[in-house]
Image (cartoon, rainbow, N blue to C red; front, top):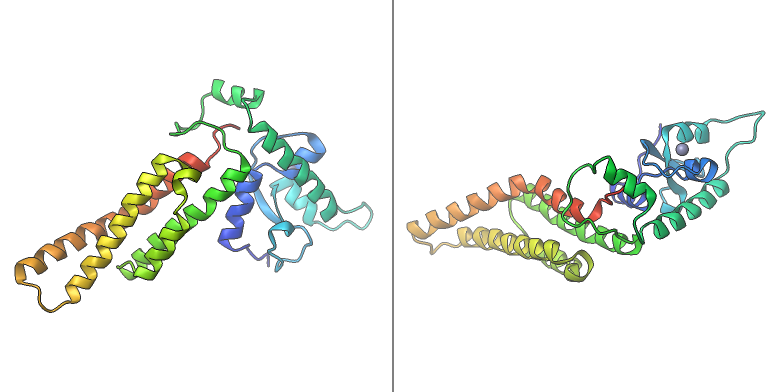
Length: 235
Ligand SMILES: [Zn+2]
């Protein structure tokens, strides 16, 4: 049985490779986005060290995993070498418009993104933890129906630099997210207090209900917000 890499690591590999296959690039010079899977380069399904993982197209994933007795098997070193070439390519390719992205524009890009500027991998990598911190707090609120203040604090700390790393759109989105999380917790705490009048209680329940509606609908919206700054729009 093939083990799946933990979600967080998987995301890291997907973002790093931008769904380009290192072997397609290294062997064939292809830079197209491909359908693929994450391969364990040492063929040990328990080794989820990011260095041991690589996004490969289905064809190369199969070829990498199959054992040949006659022909020489693909080696981890080969793929890691191709990966480093691909990474260099992706970094330089991101600096300015390439023929590939011009082509993509001519054929129409998938959907409009709010920020069509290209993102260097180093910046890209710094956005991932901000996305994950936001996602974690949202999941926790969905599960618990409240926003424990230690978790809100962790979120605030992890997203503190969002303005510089993700830009003003995400920063103001996260400000609002933070305010609502705190409001949810505040409503929860108030409902536990005994000296609320009936009117006050009704109002707090109404507030909390509205915050529940927000939580319930927020996951796809949150993903879309981040996709606008995380999805690279060419290819
Ligand atoms: Zn391939």
